Length: 69
Image 1 (cartoon, rainbow, N blue to C red):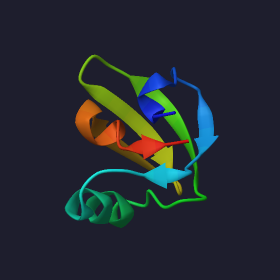
Image 2: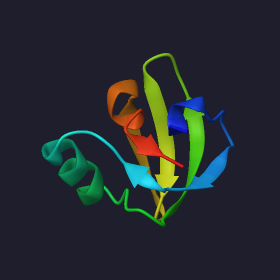
Image 3: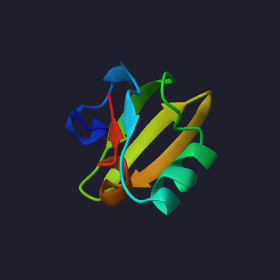
Image 4: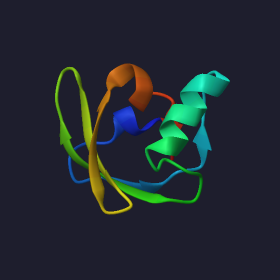
């Protein structure tokens, strides 16, 4: 399921990164790698703030919908 379905405080392990090669490369560069734990810190209408590998990263819903747990 995509991380966009998690509520604030929800956690999971990344199982897949979808999208075009450029999208996957961008997310990998931000630390979104398969097998990595993440936590949704906050959820807004426009996106998510996610804690991954010790960093808080803001993602728009378009990118966040490509990360699956």
